[in-house]
Length: 337
Image 1: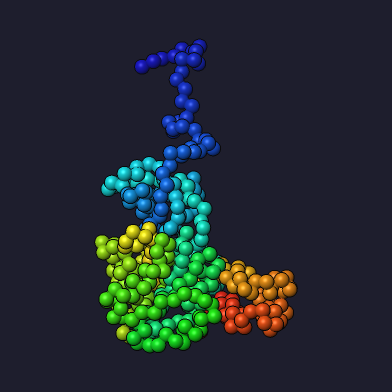
Image 2 (image 1 turned 180 degrees about the vertical axis):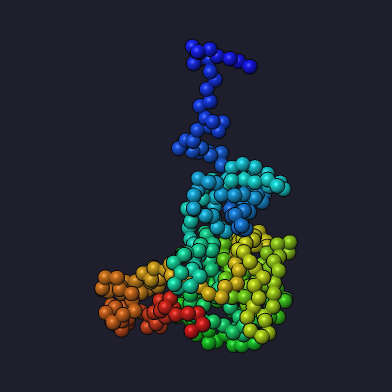
């Protein structure tokens, strides 16, 4: 044991500049110039499954990203173990700019916005014509979310052998939304999937709809068999479907068309608290010129709106203006109204 006298030389004493034994903190962050590009396929309790080249890699979000969360469809950059082997984990260090977003809130009074899907080109709104009954207000809300987020809508009507699609098609005819009508027999025989497939080639399409409408069954018919997801049935008492899909998942289309489908959990509400009504008008390019005479901050659904006179002069179809105002008004109504 070393002993020191009264007059010790301080240079002989070993100094510990950092008692914890770790390096001091710094504001300099690594640039991760060697990060690999990938796509988020699904998110489950803080773990993100990503596609990197032809490998499926498990990853977590890097701390430097803060509160910024990655969602299904995001283009990300990753570092770490990218082998895809079991029990390996990579880190997402960057999230790319999003070309489109599908967002929703729990209800119209909830200010917390949830991004469901990123970078999708198209939103397929799947609804049954019966069993369960169609809910036009929910369709309207999905259309508003699509127009607001930069996605092109596609209406898929199932179970037309139980009820006629004419009423719904007339309701949405003025919007010019493409549609596919299918029967239950066509689902079994694969004909329904073939017709829907023509609208999905080379695109990324998010599927939404309430439970029991056949959404996941249709997705399973569009993707390779080894990627199939479980399906459920409609509750005979409530007339509503049971939730079988619990998280959004991106799946490659069967074939060689480089398309993707994103299956999302069944929804029973679709809040639009986040939607800026001024962006919805952009989905009606034939009506946009008529807004030049509108008062400032016009909602396009008030007595002084210039669109009324502009349409009355024959510049656009009155049915288009009615459709616009119906979609704008749906933000103020519940889906079941």
